[in-house]
Length: 365
Image (cartoon, rainbow, N blue to C red; front, side, top):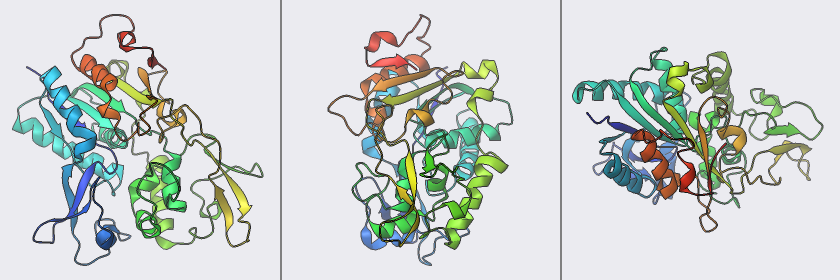
């Protein structure tokens, strides 16, 4: 029997609609984000609810441009039926990990199977890592798991979206609108995407930066009640009660079922420096994003975040093509990525360096 595959998209990978309208008004999609209704996305401190009384936001379809081609080709090549787990990407990866658990259990009964392949993109890999915790050490349900372009330890781009609204930055996480930046600060997911790898954020004085200390943050946001609440939640997510299973701690048998595919060769921000203040002395702890980029990344996720499991989990890097400078968002549309996925799912991996004949742009990290 062919094993079914569950696709878990990344942040912004699922359309969000207001179900409290006659036509399920689209509030966010890859090609449409109505400025007059973006306020409907803002969350209260209790993330179950939107601030806007008339807004009840839920997930709709998965983004066409980022995933349609991959779904069709992988289904055709592997004959594996593909099920798509769309989700409200504003919410915590931990919450969505529990929803994924319920979705898998539903499918398990519906199609009467005990095995699934899992294919994730970007933040979807973090959602899947949270789902692993729900399995409580029993990973028998996993036949194969492929995590692509996953920011295991965050991305500077998430920091940009909180601090400066991304004006002037290429391929922003959301957009450069100042109002949307304030709305994004209510999303737990954006905080969970903040960079936690060593050297990501440093003070110009050499003092060590504490991500969870509000006093270390830029002064224009550090006292905001929602910011303080989300920062506290982040500490619980990352440190106090880690929500994600670390892949290097999986049993040896389970590790062999996993594959990580990452992007390489595109200029990627991997660090910032905090200055004491801005030139006009209006803001303390100024986050200075004007730092050199590293070529080791996909434009969004640097190697410092994407390769942390390379010593335990097979990790393959795909070099960005010279004409393709939107590697991260459309990673699954790359034919080389699709070839690797197809081979891994079909267990066409019985020879040494089974990925190497795809080309010099593909390498093991």
